[in-house]
Amino acid sequence: MSLGQQLIAWRRELHQHPELSGEEVETTARLRQWLGDAGIKILPYDLHTGVVAEVGEGDKRIALRADIDALPIEERSGVAFSSQRPGVMHACGHDIHTSVILGAALELKAREASLNGRVRILFQPAEENFGGAKSLVRAGALRDVSAIFGMHNEPGLPVGSFATRGGPFYANVDRFVFRITGKGAHAARPHEGNDAIVLASQLVTALQSVASRNVNTLDSVVLSVTRITGGNTWNVLPESVELEGTLRTHRTDVQEKVKARVSEIAAGFASAFAAQIDIIWYAGPTALVNDANWADFATSVARESGFETQHAELHMGGEDFAVYLQHIPGAFVSIGSASQYGLHHPAFNPDEALIEPAARYFAQLAEKALNQL
Ligand code: NI
Image (cartoon, rainbow, N blue to C red; front, side, top):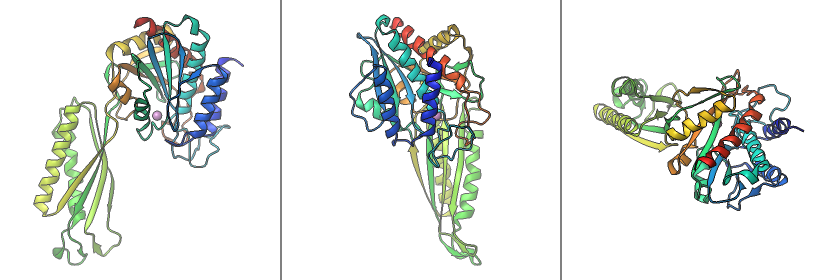
């Protein structure tokens, strides 16, 4: 079997047996088996799920990272190797990322003797709930590593295309919940209560002015209210309403400014309506900030490897790879996967033709990066 065929076979096996974040037990067992069969050393980190392997010898170290978890989505792609697990699907293509980095590991193993150092290979669990990168860092997986690289497939780009950028790339992800407490009343006697629904409606509208009127148009901000919950029947005004949503930014100063403005607006509404508004913020991943030099380096190696390279647009999604880049420099890159349906869609179906060239690219990138240290 050729490398390409092997990687597609592995990808399909992973695709048929997807596991949710933090539950990647079978995936971990498969990876250990495949890496072990290839004679690749697995490092003895204490991990519930996920695998860290290493190829090469010496003091210099470069890391490659793939994510391995799937999503709670019922697959409707129609492919013959569809998920065999009801309600769980590799709808973000982490099975593709895993097979790409497995291929890179095999390639690097084949030229181990000529490597100018070690390549540490991280198969990270729990990317989707943004906990996996921290668990690997805590376990020591970045120790003595000088730079790290990783990828996400990009359904909107054709196979053979490559994009990245220096500096901010993926967004800061914040989640917020507003708890609005008024006073319940009979729907026919609203003057005896304090209507939390009317207040919540106006608050949602007022929040729209933050991105449009408080932040420089040239800075990226998304502030979306995604859930309104309150009341349970037609003739009672509820005492409380909850709003939930997300804030996406690329710069810490913009993020802080928006959060402060949101608090001011909420305090103003609470005062004007004599109600109570509590805001709870949950911090998601911070912005993914690529090292400019490593991003240029990754692009030039991609061009040499035959990819059509381009400058990536800012991405409003979050990506757990950001955590590694807070510890060491590196670059995260997009590789075209040409799926008609996008990431997290039940019919998402990336083109497997990207796997082998991307695997060879990452082997090349790691080898050249070691020479660069
Ligand atoms: Ni993903």
